[in-house]
Each structure stands twice: as C-alpha cells, then as structure tokens.
Image (tube, rainbow, N blue to C red; front, top):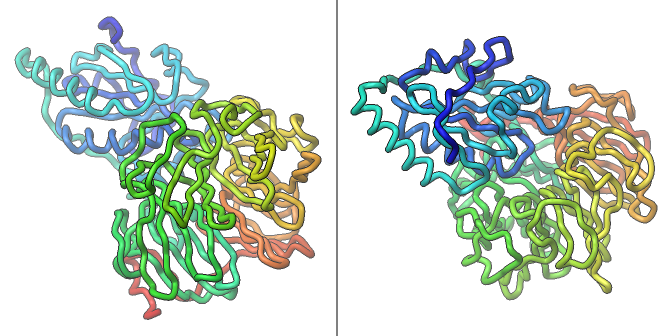
Length: 505
C-alpha cells in the first residue's frame, strides 16, 4: 500500500467512452473510485475485467470504476479501436483515453494492469498490480464504505452512464469473429462476440449454428450448448470432430458433427493461476485462456495465451501438459524448457515444427516437434516494445501484435493484426512481405494491397483460397491465391442471436 495522498484530477479535455461527458474526481466525491490502468492487447488486463464487473455490480451505489486506457501499441491509441475493444469485451464502465501516458505518469503507474483505489474524499489509499486481487480489493472497498459511513462522507447513489453498446448495438450477423477454419466439411467460424460457432459451405449457406449465442459453459446438443468467446479450432476430418479453444471459459470443447453434440474435454471452467510448467488429467487441470489449436497426430497443441506457453493434450490418454515455455513473458529461444513466449495467439504446423504468432513480442516463433526440439524466432524483433510495420528479413522485420498464422505450401500466412495487413513469411529464411492490405483500417475489397482490413485475427487456407476472420469488420474475407483478389463472403439467412429466428438447419 502507498501513503494517503490526494488523487490527481482526471483530464476533462481527453476522449472519454462509455459516458456522455467526462467524469471528474470532484463530482465523484462521496464514492469509492477504482482507476483501472489497462491496454486492450494485454491478456492480464482482460483477465481482470470479470473481477471489475463483479465489484461494479456488488457496489453499484457506492463504487465507480474508470478504465484508464494507456496504450502499448500505436494501433491502440486510436479512439475508434478502443471503442471496438469496449464492445468486444462488453465493458460497462467509463473509459478515459490516456493520451501520451499523462494519467499513467501522474499516478506513477509501472505495469499493466494496475488498479488505483481512491477513497470518497479523493485520496489515493492503495494500489494493486497484476491479476488475482479481487478478494483483497473487495475487502478494501467494504472497509472504506464502513469508515466513510461513520464519518458521513459517503454518498450512496447509482451513476447513470451512456454505454457504447447502447449507441452501437452488435446486431451484425457475425460479431468480432476471432478465427476461421476451412475444411472439406465446410467453413467453421468462431463467432466470438456472439459466443457461438457458425458452420457454412463455401457459398455462404449456413449448415449449423452451434451454441445458443449467450455466454456460458454448457455441454449438450447444438441448440443447447454454450461457449464464452470461442477462438481457435482444429478439425479431425476422419472422425468429423471439431476441437475448439473456448477461450474465456478456459476450456477445450469437442464438437461431434455426426451426433451434433458438444462436450468439454479439458479445463475446469476456472482460470488457472499456475504459470509454472505442469500438467495432469485434462478435466481436472485448470487452463488459462487457450487461444488457438492445431492437431498433430493424436495430439492437440494449444497456444495458451494466459501463461505465455504452448501446451499439448494427448487425445488418447486425456493428459494435458505444458509443451514449451517457462511461464515468463518475453522472447527467449532455446530448448522447450528454456524458451519464453509472450501471449501466443495463433498456431499452425508443417508437421516438423509448430509456428506461433507470438503477439506481445510481435514475432513469429518456430517450436520443434522433432529432435532437437528447439524454439527459434522466425521473424520479428523479439522485443516486447519492438513493433512496427517493416517488411524484410528475420530480426529486421517489424510486425504489430500478430494474432493469426497459417502454414500452406512451404509458406506462412500471417495476420499482422494491428497493422491491418496480411503478410507472407518464409519459415526457412525469415523473409516477410506484405501481400494484402494498405495498412489503413477499413473494409475494402480489391486486389492485393488495394484491399483493407480492420484488425484481422484468424487465417485458414484451403486449395487456392485464403479465408480471413476480419475481426473488427465482423466479416469473413476470401482471397483468390492466384490473383490476390479479396472479396467479402455473404452468409444467407445468418443473423445475430435474438435478432431473428435461426433457420431450421
């Protein structure tokens, strides 16, 4: 805890979101205030959002949470991109856009996420950094309310806010699709913002809707099952089984297309706090934000974003364990046990090596599946702050928070998410070239670099087509790999949950 000091006032002339007017500590006097210093790329920042929502609900009439968005990446400085993140993660408290880290510096913050607690008399009385502090903060709020009730310095009333989701409701057929998987059985789409999976043919006709479209962890038939922001998928064509990284449920799910049922195969539904390499029986082992999957033989390899590791699940024995990564956050090459990753968010393979989109170090990593089992950096600076938009070779390449990677015909397709581009990388030479997108956020079909995307996150190649989950545009794009012509797929009879009656599939 830090000494009791007067809290610096919040800037009124900066951009504010989730409120129709700037908020000041002066007007919030009489309430407990929590400033959440966050940035929307950061998995640890995302992990504490449910804690904040819990506290907001519990202390509606006495607590105000204000998110102070202090951007790490250049792309995160754009107010519109922050607005999209608010919608994606269903954030319901006011957000102050902390231009040039002014508020961060005034409060002497050192890490994302940091919660700064301010009492009803506008004094800073403590702070906590990192995850797992909900109970301690809850206890502190209770103490503050009790103390200030006795002093008569608390003012109980509920604050009325105008939320971004009220201004811009998510009624698009897809909402923030995170990943896409093209297979002989059709196109599988992780409709992450609608908490469901969409299966279509390549003409856009809907074959299955899997999940009811509300966040939850429920097994059962396609019309009963629930997911929570599902992301990456892997398909077993022989057995017609789809494996799903159910990211915010911290679970892996198995979708049987023939029986049309969903079951949980790994995870407890609770987030693991253990970042040391470990393992166990899959349904008894808590996971931490599994983000993407690839199947190799009888194993699933998992980009486990939360502990910055690559995991492996043996589908025969149901044993799940850390495969690579110490649990620290950085970019360190070497043996599987020595290696270090930073929020791996995409994974693919050529059978000899796994390739990982290591988002927080804006790099593509290679992870050996055969002797000598080494981890290497294919391209990118390998630094937490070494990002940009530079084509070239190996460590001279600059990407910006890449989330997707797909191996096809000796090359890697990379979703360079925060640069709004698709790039092509040679895994053998580390050469990286922009192929699609002009670098501006937008929705524009066309050829090659005349096209535009908005934070694309997932990629899948089948035959002569590349499919792209164009996340912030809420669409799937298709690229003819012979001409590099980009088109936007249209899905007949698909609509947002609760907007229309789903087709009788």
